[in-house]
Structure formats: C-alpha cells, structure tokens
Image 1 (cartoon, protein in one colour):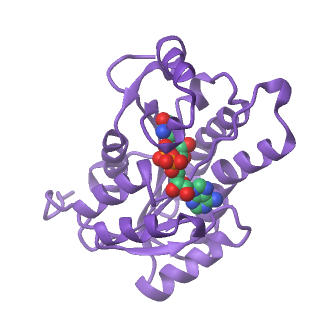
Image 2 (cartoon, helix red, strand yellow; image 1 turned 60 degrees about the vertical axis):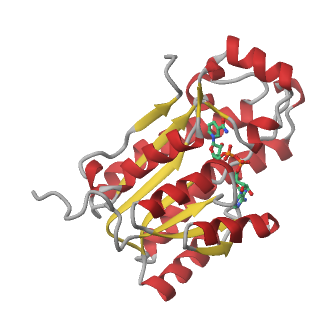
Length: 251
Ligand code: NAI
C-alpha cells in the first residue's frame, strides 16, 4: 500500500464531526484535526452558545447546535453532513457529562442522564450515520472513554459504568463496521485539567491524584493527538482498540 501524499496534512479533504467541541478536550480535538487538514463540524448543546462559534471560527470549521442525547440526534447529524458535505469521514464522540454522587445517594436521574449522553448517544449516532450512509467509505469513529471506565472512581458509579460501556461498545462494533471499511477506536484519558475536572473540589482532586486511578495527568492536546492518530491513515489497520492517555505514570 502507499503512504498518503501529504503526511503534514493527513486529513486533507476530510470532513470530521466533533461533539462537545465548545470547550475542553473537544475544542482541542477540533484544533488538532483542523491542523491536520480536516474541515471540522463543531457540535455542542445549544446552551454552549458563543463558546461553540468561537471554537468553530478558531479552527476554520462550522458549528452545529446539537444535543447528542436527543433521540433523533443521529438522524439530524446524518442529514446535516449529507446535505452540506455529501457525508462525513470522521466522527469523534467526545461530548460527556458527570453527575457524581456516592453510590448510596445515586438516583435514577443521575444514572439516566450520564448513560444517555456518554454511552447511548455515541451508539445511536454512529448507528444512524452508518444506516443513512452518512459515514463515508474508510470512515473513522473515535469514542472518548475514561480511565474511570477501566479502574472505576469513587462517586462515579454512573460515569464509570458509562465509560466502561463505551469500551464494550467499541469492541462489539468494530467487527460490524469492519465489513463497511470503517474503524472504531476509543481513547481513555486520565485526569485532564478542564472545566469538567475543575468542578471537583480541590481537596478531592488532589487526593484523587495521589490515591486513585485518576492520579495520572495529561493535557487536552495529549488526548487530541491520539484521536488524530485514530482519524489518520496511520491507523488504517487499527480497530476495536482502547488507548489510555494518562501522562507518564502507569496504572
Ligand atoms: P467539558 O465539560 O469541559 O466539555 C464537555 C463538552 O461536552 C461541553 O462543551 C458540553 O457542553 C458538551 N456536552 C455535554 N453534554 C452534551 C450533549 N448532550 N450534547 C452535546 N454536547 C454536550 O469536559 P472535558 O473534560 O473536555 O471532557 C470531554 C470528554 O472527555 C468527556 O466525554 C469526558 O467524559 C471525557 N474525559 C474527560 C476527562 C478529564 O479529566 N477531563 C478524563 C477522561 C475522560
């Protein structure tokens, strides 16, 4: 096989969707995919407001207000990319939420919202994109799991379950998508400084870093570069894999 013509811009001519792109890890993923040549459709919930258009402008992409947990989110996205771009090449399921509580106090609303956004949405959207023919031949699906889905984390039974579910989802979907020449992989970040982790009280965060599975750190760009690898021709033969991005200390 041949190497792509331009390794500096391996995603030239590609169309990428990034969910949860308004800020944090998603915004950096949008930047890195754009740097690599892709046109990036930055999707986020309507309440993300200005932050979403700021990211889209910064990366020279377009923005799309989309709640990934809406039942018809996949169909909406499929129609959007088919109409404007004739389909998409890459979809990154980065949108995610936490609703932490100790297990004894974990209520149904917290379970449902976290499972809905973090696990069901990636599944339904991928499914709809494929069913509508909106993911092109050679397509790439990248899911964002978490180290909390591998090692668990106190107060995050719902979140850890959703992120462990993403790993099962990726592994189960890979052989199905392989028949359509589409790969699906996941990145499992450790502790990354974003608005999501800033919501964790300082003492808990520091203790967590030292004592738990989340002790490892990393930057949003570390996660984004791994996503870019899964999106690029460099990973043509890689599917059904989970890569931890946890800084330099091992689990
Ligand atoms: P963040 O909270 O800074 O950003 C998440 C983005 O997703 C926000 O822009 C938010 O508006 C958007 N979003 C939330 N619900 C949505 C919905 N229903 N539809 C569309 N967009 C929605 O979070 P961060 O830290 O950037 O996390 C990004 C992903 O990485 C998440 O899936 C998270 O679970 C995962 N992750 C984060 C880690 C960290 O340490 N920050 C560690 C491991 C995984």
